Amino acid sequence: MVCQACGTPVGEGVHFCSRCGAQVAAAQPIYAAYPNPPIAMAAPRVQRNLQTLGVLWCVFGAYRVIGGLIGMFFLRAFAFRNLGGFDWPFDSHYHGGLDHSWMGALFPVIAVYTVVMAALAVTVGYSLLTRRPWGRMFAIVVGILTLLKPLFGTALGIYTLWVLAPGASGLEYDTVADRT
Image 1 (cartoon, rainbow, N blue to C red):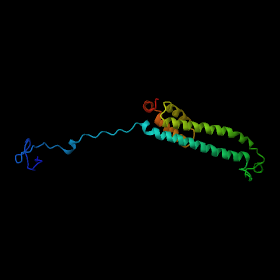
Image 2 (cartoon, helix red, strand yellow; image 1 turned 45 degrees about the vertical axis):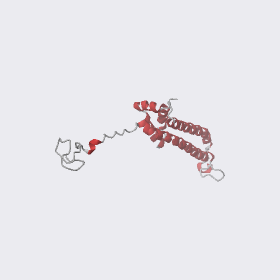
Image 3 (cartoon, rainbow, N blue to C red; image 1 turned 135 degrees about the vertical axis):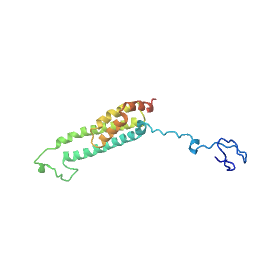
Image 4 (cartoon, rainbow, N blue to C red; image 1 turned 180 degrees about the vertical axis):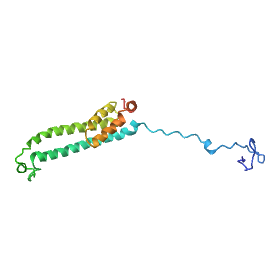
């Protein structure tokens, strides 16, 4: 041990320096002087993913609207055999007089389906972003329905179920839900 004031070597168990009279403190390792840092706990699964999930559902709603509009555009092209004036290559003389007018009856079906599915997706996104108490269960139900939509719908449905379906997620969602 060494005196911190003058640097004179001091023996073990001595409390004062024999040269300068300064009090000698027992040397402690440097790391012992600092308290243990708090362990950083990761935010629970629902809190970490709820914002992202809400935004993805809103984007998926817009994707459903755009997909429905494109589908109706192509249906119109096939049903009426032209896009507004020029000859359509699938006209009746190419198909031996096949009548495609029945496809025009699908417009209301596609329009209603597009609006309902987009509204469901946007409502799920809104309920998750605003932490509504009914949002978790609604998101699980719509997530299961969305599993049938290839690619983006399937991925979003799996992600939704991974975040919100476990029992522990229900308790966690209840703590972050807006209970007003």
